[in-house]
Image 1 (cartoon, rainbow, N blue to C red):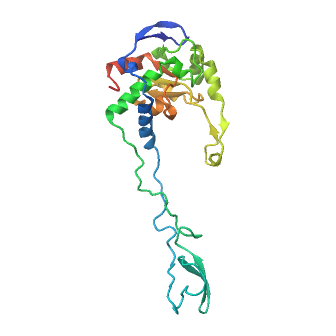
Image 2: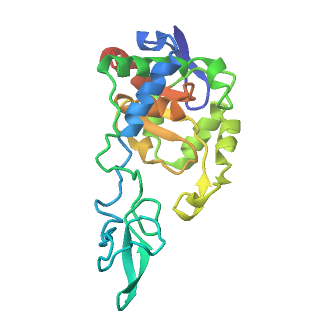
Image 3: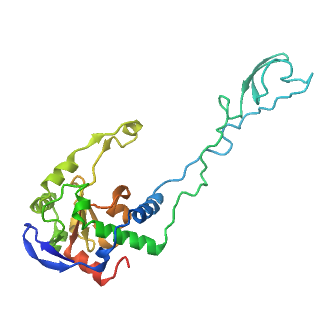
Length: 266
């Protein structure tokens, strides 16, 4: 497969042969497994404190004539603790049992639960190849993004040397991504308690720019929805956000050469 190379003005500069990593069959089930494996490593383990809800003495005698006994008072045989006492008469309140106020949880989350999901090395690499091939399928990308007419295409390596936000936006507009940039600007207020927990707004996922190495354009981070990633660090989560393949990805010319020369993801 050959793709056109565009310069920063949106003009054709030549063509480039795409590596065999982009010829993989689309496998949504495999991409989802690889996404879950990557995403599971970002989840922090959590659980209730051992002994929570069991910190009170709730032993009540069920025998006749015993001091501090619950026999013959007409109350159910629930574990209870003394709330107040007057002589040999006690006011009990339920404790320790799951069904009581202030008692323990029946099946609380456990901190020792294994959250991380593993995936085989060959499967992970194949999933990345599937996600790479999906980025070149215009009919798949169109379901998630405002795709320009020339897509798919490759960008000249000069994009890696851009230092200013205004220059990057100008270059993206020259590629025909005006509608896509307008789409990702829109942000909505999240429903629920997330608004009180530092995630008030929902933002949309926009184009991904893949570069060959650490470069100047990586420092440009204030374009809404646009992400920049090094080619040797891309994974299923970056290429297929939400485990859905078909992200709009712009590869630099050098990044394509690096995939071919270093035989990445094989």
